[in-house]
Length: 351
Image (cartoon, rainbow, N blue to C red):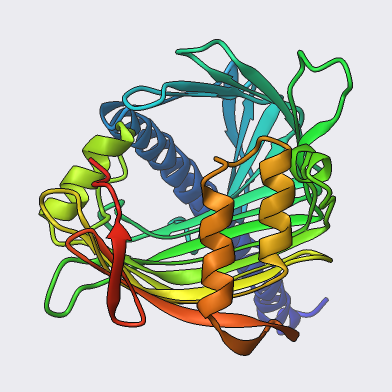
């Protein structure tokens, strides 16, 4: 090698060493960043658990650890439990939970739960067993930790009473889903836009009444003044909602079975005395026969079936979810039930 070749060889060496060194430094820096972010994520999880506990929801894990390096955070929780305090106290247990957030979107969390689960009513001791093929939750929060969106998706849910020797499902379905997002209020309190659905549902109660299903349900609307999601007795929640001027808007509600179809839309609210106000447009097909079946099975109060029959007589012919049926409009003013603009009865205050 001539002296003139030495600078060229050193240059080639630097062309190899420099990129490798940069990659190593980048990897070390990224590792340090991930560890720092993971520690911060652990702190945020602990802070969230503390906030939930103050709101009456106690979350626990038998064991908990964080993984997911290099591009995401994965929280693995074995034997997760949720206890609610206030209102109807409940304890829920599952086998495991696995939550994931990408490092570039740590405020978007997706969690999956491993079945089976057990749901216990603490006041009565009644317990229920639940299974599914996939149960997935997802949520998005803002920079302050305030939740903005939440979704629940359950494939093949099945709920049973372990004490029932028949092993019949209290409820089973092909799909259950629920979505809610926060809607900033323009001239009033914030609202929660919601959408829910049940596909291929079956119930032992309906089967006994002669309507085995399957049942399909869709629900969509908006509720204002519903930001306080702490567990509390229903009466207390309704009082607080009425005092805040809450309004429940029903944009779409449908329920269909092979025998029955029903629909509803409208808007309802409560005054400070718990009296109902608002209006609903209702439609149904085959509901009169179903109510008679439920009456014979002792599922509904016997005085309710004649009311449904009377509504069917005064309703207008209409198409309800593609079937021949009737529709009618009902109104509520300070608890007075109005049909066709005429008062026909009183609805008792809800609190």
